Amino acid sequence: MRILLVEDDPLVADGIVRGLTGEGYVVDHVDAAEPVSGMMETAHYDLAIVDLGLPGEDGLSLVRRMRRSGKALPLLIVTARDSLDDRVSTLDLGADDYLVKPFALPELAARCRALIRRASAAATNELAIGKLRIDLAGRRAINATGEALELTRREWSILECLAHHSGKVVSKERLTQAIAGWSEDISGNAIEVHVSRLRSKLGESASIRGIRGLGYRLEDA
Image 1 (cartoon, rainbow, N blue to C red):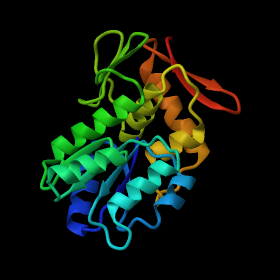
Image 2: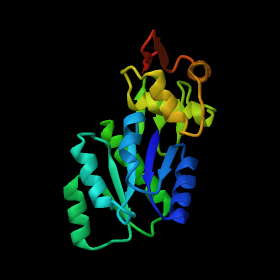
Image 3: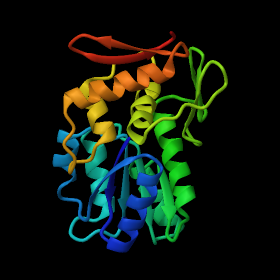
Image 4: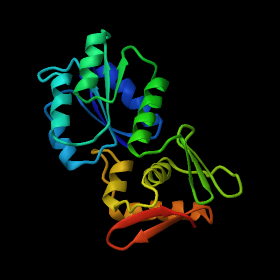
């Protein structure tokens, strides 16, 4: 899953990027609000993390602008501002959650999972597709015989993306964006290779069906 981070403090940003990358997310980071609109037009994001104290256009103005654009992207605010008025005004503008600095990275990761899960209408961190069980929090996939699959980071990211859209076709471009940041060049052929390997590992637990010209769909085997 792909996250947009808007944070001007380089130390905080580096910690968030490292922590969430370790959780399997692709994170694109910018240190100001101005580039955000263009980035959202060229890439699909599953979540945005926005600091309120940005240089130039502040976080509140950015949240207002993002919501006026009509995009339903989940928004998590991270800020040192901890007053009740700040929390209320930010949530009223359209933010989905609010986390006060300093915070622990495990809590940030848990809130990210919760917001992405809510956006995909998944009630829990446990998803089941056919005989496959997916533990989003533990980043594990359990096959029909109860064994945990040995997945690479990119195979897991593809499976997670497909699972969040279970029964729906996910385009090859969308999968590319789920596993690679803007500094990585991933070809369509590479996606096909990753999907083929993942399909082999799923066995009879679930099926990844290729829809010619459209993409892939995760469904019961």
